[in-house]
Length: 416
Image 1: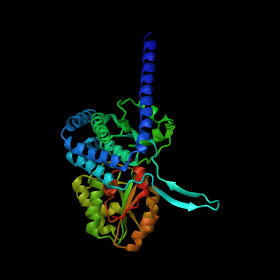
Image 2: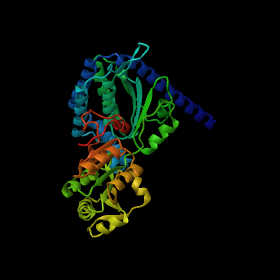
Image 3: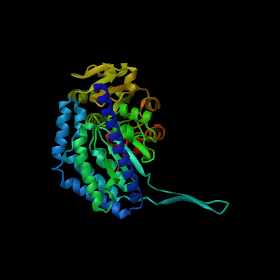
Image 4: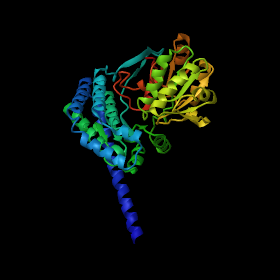
């Protein structure tokens, strides 16, 4: 009898989740039509309203955020993951400024390009139109709620957001502000919906609703993205991880190289744009490696070194030094750990990056213009930088307001 009752309860539960997600999908599809026809002024007003709401409600958001942080700490979540949950004043101000950046950008919806006349007499071109409805599945960072929502508004799309259970209170509070901003601009509140349950069954439903959802964008750990990619019945835009490199060329300014390698690794360990691997030419290594080794030793960063770099780092007092393995060259640590390898020249550096990189963000530190240009042309990554910390790989830092997922940065090449 107990088994029968449990089965019935499970079935009822599954039906409830399916009903919830179907209703959200239909509401999003209806809202997407209104968003597609919304004026640029309406969308920009919603973004500006949202920026203002984020500022005026900064204090009011803290209790919800504190609830998430306390729950995460009690559950034993790793410190870098807890750090991702924080909605401090700086984070909220960045979100607000991101909304304002988007509002200031030209509205490209309806823009026609590439118009040509065919021999038959017809004219053919491309018009930019909204996708319709996208589903966003993400972990940890509650500010992603604002980033995804603001980009949906600017692009004239509707979206269904499903954040991680660890940030549910913060996400609910932020989503309420988004819907308030939409309504104040005479746009449908259902244009941005947050899945209200942390039940994983909701994800299974969201990624299997092609009638309501046009594309799924997962943003989180490798496990999440692999699951979504394997199970989705909707097209998926994805990128699995962020194994970023900083390469110190033989002509690099030593002081600059140390500062950049320090910032790229230690400014924050948890983001996907933090440098996970250092490459340094044989000519630059004797001066650079002990210098950066001392910085990392002071900050408790473990260096996983190739044989050549280990010799040069062995005299650094207090440094956590470990032999690198083959697996280290492709590892995303998201922790105070960095791999380091001595290479012969720019050719070997480029070849190493293209083999082991996750094609997210890679940087060359150099005063050699020819090497810089080769690095920009030949490194196959979304963001390719010259003399800049990989931590600058960010929609806000690029002046684009936000990014909706790692892979969307692939349309840019940067050399700040």
